[in-house]
Image 1 (cartoon, rainbow, N blue to C red):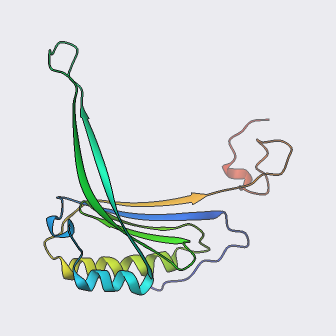
Image 2: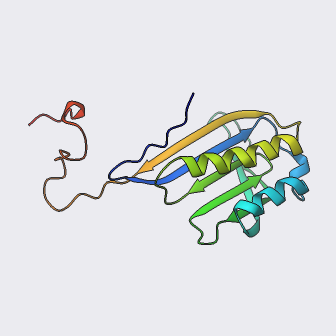
Length: 164
């Protein structure tokens, strides 16, 4: 199967996000990342910016229960890596990993970076299991002043369901 790179005359793609949610929290990622994974991240995303985050969980009882609302805070480290111009980000946390490209003309660069980091993740932490894979494309169409429902020129007439 050949991989053809599709190039559109005009692209409305402004962001691509790929996310892996782990089946269980990776305790080995709490204090640091495996050396190979950190090295692969820095190769493609040279600006390292680890952050300490606080996850808050509220437990609200049902109306009939007499227990009070309970709050549990958990401190966790998120390992952020950015491209030189900060137009792309990799974040590795104990329960997930995501790559975000803010400006993209095609999916290929994002795919290649994701596959390289994911392969390194699986080889450096073979115990990791994936619960969910997510892929999101964000398209933005800036319409000139005029009719906000006039999509002709942007979307094929066959796909337009707006009646006149």
